[in-house]
Length: 291
Image (tube, rainbow, N blue to C red):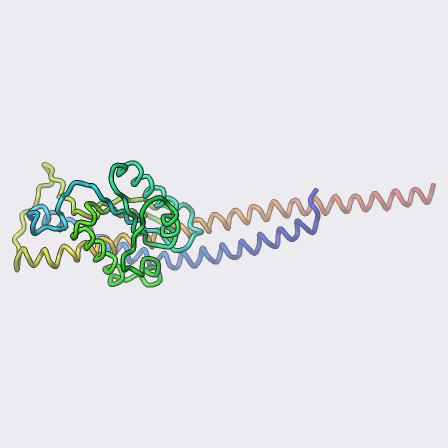
């Protein structure tokens, strides 16, 4: 039977942990509401802009459509998006596993480089055999301190520049797509080159009339759309992080409550055993005196 003092100290320790996890759950729930509103408002606009971009890119030739130029895949850049903090279940681990599997299996014959966004991905892949790059980017970790379209655009511009100059033939983005607080879907999305639209019998390619000119559209709309796609991925990842952390802290709080009940039961049993032993000693001593 465990020592009474040890069990009592354990109960106090678990109770303190329960208070912390409960507070973290409430903080994540408050942040989740704001992040969820942001991504649900952004998603329809980003998806429609992506659809227009795909149709537009399919009508461009290789000289004007630098971001839709399909090349032989020899060098691949993978952009995993993780958080800066842990305690969010398998949120970060799922991204790291998906990125590693993508690099080792799908692009095993190509030269793979990693551009990690977030502290967890940065720490992991700097110790991995894959090459990590950041160029002149300094906000790959700090971006979560202030997630804005302007900050996301800096990263997107660097990625587009690397593709346009031929440093990489393909760019993949790996992130968690927000579905609800309990479910996050790991997405591997081709960022560059821009995919042509999937033409079916029900869905035919759209023939656009360019105004003011095709050149202006190429110079302005396509880069803006690519920046929007990355920003949407970051918003999805942010909402997914808060949802995953809220769920993880909710489970941790429940587990702490169950453990406290078990420890209190153990404490009461140990206390009762101690009282029983004391009574037996007293009775035994009294009988010895009377005998």
